[in-house]
Image (tube, rainbow, N blue to C red; front, side, top):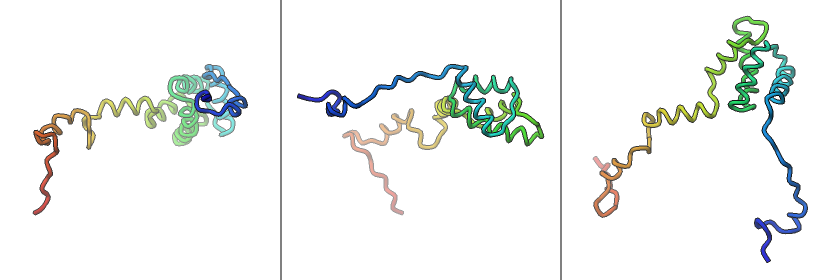
Length: 139
């Protein structure tokens, strides 16, 4: 007899299944409010709304990292609290995962050692027998 999923039956009996769900917007807002309070960052309501929307579209981790960076931008401009323009400035400086992937996809042909679209070059360098030609590097 084989155990399900390759896990011994006695261990499987002790496992607990915990269902998880994505945070709702209200919960994300509360988490960001707590984080702002812990980091002693004063933020306008409009900036909190924008930060909540960014967290819902990207990730909560990205939005939480933006709090301190936006606070530094605000203090640089001698502001007393983080405003929407501070959040927008930080958003333009630091990219999230999706924008980073999109950038790489858009400019992949311009990067050094690009493998996409180089199949024709490899075929030209190959021997008709299917073996690659050796390059002579001696002087």
